[in-house]
Length: 446
Image (cartoon, rainbow, N blue to C red; front, side):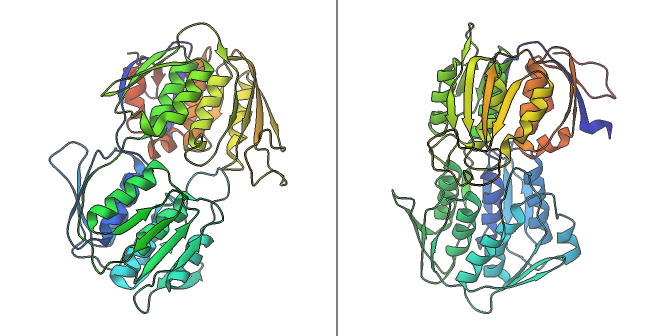
């Protein structure tokens, strides 16, 4: 399929302005939250990405009316007539997203039962769904696994419970929040994820009438209520996309103004960006990122859960680190397979060596296991265009950055995967002066 292949003619700096809208890691979850309400919800700053389309389709299958509002990037979601969906229709969405698992709690509250198909998502390491189901069992759900998916039943109202996560998982925290708000009694969640997108989801639920308190020690208390209403909410901007464009500016020696980027949720990234040698300037409308000239500096970096350096920032930054002078050390502690994308960078001329040992001091789940989760990046390296096959969302955008920084032409396969989390990325590339073309097109330059 030629539309899934992109030719990238590299070697030119990206310069100009792009806009980021609502966070991919919040908007689909806020859409699911609308299922819990008795009235319509209004969600603003919604990006045009595939995950939004998948959730919109699933909501409509369950009787939720979803329409665009008067404002650009606005959705009106009305769950007044929630109903059971046809199993075959739900199954048609299997493999396209991991979001369906979050429908469990809301559907159990609204219908007393739910069906969840097999799940897709990026292959970057283990993200087992069994823990989601175990959490739902603790709330009182009955779960049966079948070849085509999982059936869940709530014979009576779900009950609050005490849960301690073995790891502060974002998905598991979302599952608990979306289930506990209408469960009877109090739910105590310990070792919860506290990413900005989680806090924004809590804000959405509070607007609906939920009672949720966030402690300072990763403990969340949720007091169940009998009924929730709709919400009116503007999604926080996508800090992960903003950082990707920042890394593109750094790797291509460019200058990009990211309208909509917000300083507060990006503080950890901004500190690291400055240590590498990048420059940035914050104003009320966004953040300008640029390469100030001279050599970039090698750094030691460890990913971690928020407020640490986010794992989704790691891959695009590694591309920029191939242009830094010296040895950079990267210790990935969140997803065990996230460094696999570096083999393609080496084929382009990068010098990246992977290790099974923990090259860092952050407590890590992978140290005694057989995962190559640490990297040493030696630079600067001259990158040469090549054949690239996109492995996952963030790795895919990182390949685009590498192709743009490289000499010559790269053929990037599987670009449709990038649409999962990057709105209008082709248009944005061209707005920044990138020389890119689909095989069926004439070369387009900005």
